[in-house]
Image (cartoon, rainbow, N blue to C red):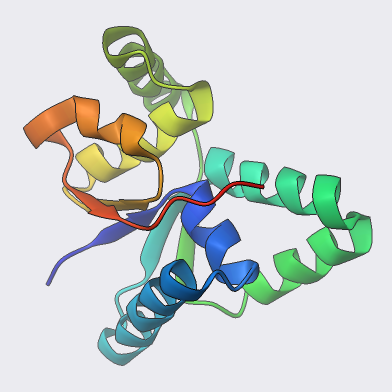
Length: 138
């Protein structure tokens, strides 16, 4: 069974109900419930989602989404010292954004496919399988 790691924009697309991204993530969540194999997300990327929701929709909406997250089959993985070091190395080697490097690190470490709308991850090539979502702008 394939494992998936969600980038921040995958979850934002789901919460913002961007049609194609939302439908794909919704299917992954349903499959995750059926198989009892949660989707994964770095705590750093969750923080990015929380920040963006607060920035664009206010604190109450960000808190409501945080509450909803706890009911979804998503395991939020902490960023410890080793994970942060590996993420920083990926950032340096592949010129990724800082938060993006945590999504990539988690996917590589768990041998998972990264679910993202960000084409920047494609520069990692074969070391990071990507499930592309349609790109959206805020």
